[in-house]
Length: 288
Ligand SMILES: Nc1nc2c(ncn2[C@@H]2O[C@H](COP(=O)(O)OP(=O)(O)O)[C@@H](O)[C@H]2O)c(=O)[nH]1
Ligand SMILES: [Mg+2]
Image (cartoon, rainbow, N blue to C red; front, side):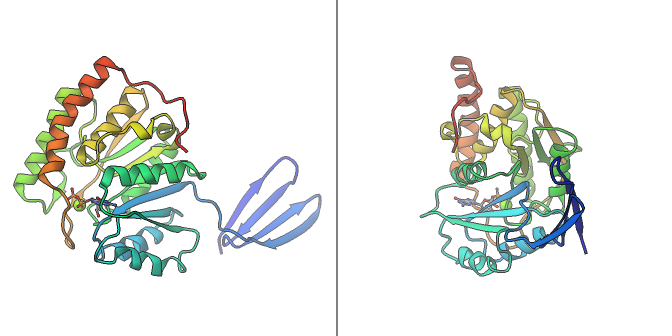
């Protein structure tokens, strides 16, 4: 039986039992009530999907088996393989913890995340995560990312493959070298102090996403990941990379294309130039 204790100035103490019942002790009287909604979680994991039928149920179950009560939002681009139907079937089992948004057609990873960020900002989430569906990112590392922001006070935590050498399993050597040198190239052009510049396993503190004009994010593939880090860094937020092991997918196919790679190579030059003519500033409007 899990009991949570909270107190406030007016009403002495209250206990939550298994997240379902509330026991309130107020001026010597004891009240209890069945909670009508789940305890609000502070963390949302956004998972974009395109044809992930072999992975999606397993990754959702794995995340919900962790000791921390994360919420999950899947953004599916009408995957022809029926990924969204698998998620729909799981929603009654994980009611109020699992959410699904379906978009009409493959619109790219970057716009899926922007959609998810806005969705999260409309709600109360304090920590907003990016994660792939294909088990390249180990769900257990979510706790490390969370602690880096929530306990150590960083604004952006990045799961990095390149802190101690190269922590990548099962990628062909060509792809490892390409990713490693692409990261070095991005560092050289942008001067950004991040080792794994294309990493897509991250935890943002809410304030970071509020400070960025999400409608002005231009890129959609790896360049999207670089652009988000670059702006976060330029705005002076505290960034911390934590070492993770990245394992290539064993099920389903990669959606990486030559176009995505090209966007990243030319995109960084554009980012740097853009910042010379129009330096990055904190967004004063609303993303909601
Ligand atoms: N919603 C959405 N998800 C996508 C799209 N492209 C890739 N993804 C998802 O983004 C994640 C990373 O893609 P993946 O193909 O594994 O890229 P790789 O790891 O670089 O080979 C996976 O969860 C994909 O299903 C897209 O256009 N839309
Ligand atoms: Mg992948």
